Structure formats: C-alpha cells, structure tokens
Amino acid sequence: MSTTSLTHVAANTYAAANSFVRSTGTAALTQTRAYTRAHTRVTALAASAATAGVLGTAGFAVGAAPWAQALDNVGHVAQGDGRVAVGQSGAFAFAPITGSKTAGGTTELDALHSAATSSHSTTVALGKHAATVTAPKAPAAQPYVGKHAAAAATTTKAAAAKAAAVKAAAAKSAAARVSAAKEAAAKAAAAKAAAAKPYLIYDSVQPGSLPAGEAAAVYATGAYATQPNTVASHHTVLWIDTQATDPGANVLDVEPGDATPQAAAQWVKQRLTSQPHSIAVVYTMRAEWQQVKDNVATLPGWMQSKVRYWIADPTGVNHVVPGSSATQWYWGSSYDITTANPDFQQ
Image (cartoon, rainbow, N blue to C red; front, side, top):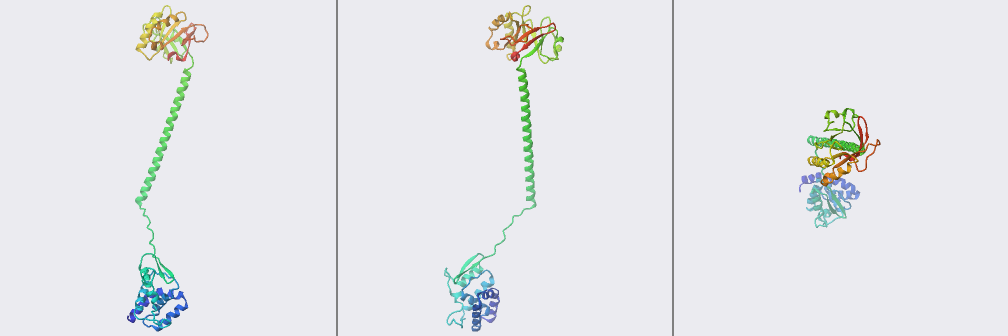
C-alpha cells in the first residue's frame, strides 16, 4: 500500500481513534508512538487504533462510519507484514483486533465493522468488555389534522348539541303532557266526587218559576207540556211523560189521573228497547209503588236493573225513602223539591 493510501487511512480514522487513545491513558499513547517509529507504513493515528485493540481494557461505541472505516483500513495494513518492534517480536500488533475471535466465531474487527455498518443496536465483544452500537431513532410521526377534520369535528359537536336540545324539548313536552293529564284527572275526580253526593231537583208546572241554574224537571206530555227553550238556563233537565206515550222522555209519571201501574212495565220496555244503555225512571206515590214494582218484575232482568224509582213523600224534611233513588219531600206553590242519590240517572 502506498504512502498516499496510508495518509487517507489516517485522515479517516483520526476523528474516532484520537478520542479513544487519549481516554485509555499514557501507556497506550506511548505504545502507539513506539509502534509508529518502528513501522513507518502505518501512521500514528492508525497505530493508535491498533494499540487500542491490543489493550482491550475498555468498551467503546461503534456508531460512526469513520471509526468503522478506520478499523477496516488498519486491518488491511496489519495483514501486510507490519510487526511491532517494541515488546511484540514475532507477533502482529493488530492481532487483538484482527485475530481475536468473538463468541460467534468472527474476529473482533469483523464484529466491529459489522456493528458500525448496521442500522440496529448491536453488542459485540471486545476483549473483556462490550461495545453497544445504537442507531438514532427516527422521530415519531405526528397525525395530521387538516381543516376538513376540524370542520367535521365542529359539525359533530353542533349535531350533538342540537340532538341534546331536541331531547330536552321532548322531555319538557312529555312532562307538560303528564302534568295536563294529571290536572284533567284531578278535575274529573273532583267532578265525580261532587256527583257522588245527593243533589236537589226542582220541578214545576211553571218552568219560569224554577231557580236558575239548578237541576230541573218539566213535562213533555199532558196539560203542562213545555218547550226546551223555557229551561235553557238549567244544566240538567228531566222530561216527564204523563201518558205513557213518549218513551223518549226520561220519566213516567204514575199516579191517579196519569199513567197506570200496568202501563209502567210497557213504557219501561219500549224505552229500554230503543235506548238499551239508558235509565228508565218511574215516578209514583208510596201507595202505588208496590203495584208498579210487581208489573216491572215481569220484564227481563237486565231491564229491571235499569229501572230507578222516584217516590213522592212530601214530609217537608229532606230525605230519601229507602229503596228509592230519589224522593220528592217538598210540595210548594211554585215548585217542588226532590233529593236524588248519585245513581238516580246512572
């Protein structure tokens, strides 16, 4: 190998070898200089690298191309005939690097060269010590978030907010409906409770004399028949048939001069046949009540269950005769008064 080649070897190995030789101490440096004087074909820097291999007393990092190239160059020089003149007669000065075997059967120099040129972290044996070769790690890639992704995120948030608002509105509407239903149920219960109490009915042959707004009873047939407009101010009106000719009326009047007890059964049958879901009310005196009941008893059971008895018992005291649904307990010059139980028209 020419002097120019050796100079090139020295230039490539300087950066890696110089630091290591200095760190190994004066003895290594002295040996390097001695070798240089004895072997002019290897530069001082290359000899330093060889001497470092001879010492084998410290681990060093192999991770740069110049150091790997230096080891390679020194190996080629050593494999010529460069022998050490100081204290190593008959032995290659580079034997510790070029000839020593690693655990895997390769030379230390081969191991170093392989580690230096590898892209992975590698541990090789150098004498008694180990050298770790670590390649730098590439920075982790960062996810890219572009304007479209940001816009999509904004849209998603807006949609979630809108859905939450719709859900809240639906819940509020449902709560309002529940509240309204409860209020309606409470009103219905109150009305039912009020209807469950006995109430007063006013009847007269002179509709104009009846107390305004109260439940009233007037005549549909006979001498005192009236028209609907005469009782328009009353919320409840019962129509009385005195001749057993109008099954559309609510009440049949059974007393002397009006319908007979025998006609009562026929009238009840006609009314309930035409209006099976209605009630048939029979007004009568206490003296004729049993005859009326005997005639009604000839009707089917379901018809009998729909008959209500309104009994005249003018004691002047508010009461309801047992077994009846209503009792006319007051007779006056303008109107009569009756107390009716809640089931009177049900």
